[in-house]
Image (cartoon, rainbow, N blue to C red):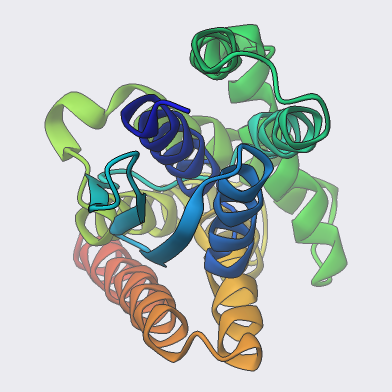
Length: 253
């Protein structure tokens, strides 16, 4: 067994799991099972939302460790499912390490990627359906549709100006959503600015982060759970502050 190749395989798969939205306990368990399947001795795995550390005993008996920084987080259910399925297959069949790593490397490209127009349509349709759930009418839903289209465009194409900071991105998108909702209602496209704004802001609610935070706290991963909870609270503050600023600007105009 080549311990270096096994560590590289395990860390690469673990990072893909974490970046696609897996909870920390799943990342640690999947990587540990992979190491044990390849007869990795004294396997140890430690993961937090921003870092993955994997260690095992090398051929000469010395401990060997890999540490990988996890720079981005998201929610990609299709990639997550593919990573889990491949991990189970590797544990069951244990192909050569070079082949296994090549298969892991092909995972991101193998998952289906929707066209930007399709994603934009999803961003627009979601607020249009959320709005009636909160009591809005047809015109409110239509107004939320246009607001969702603009917010979706900011999320998809605004990375060059907004960067990767989730708080700043949420703050700006929330402000745009609330300001545009107010202007559309004033223009006669919709009757309740609060319902339109709430429907659009549902796009920014950190639901997956909160769910994973609760799961990790229950599983005993206190540090990871508190970290994700703090992240979710920060995003919620960005939503509230952005909405307040957007509405304030709208009422001044």
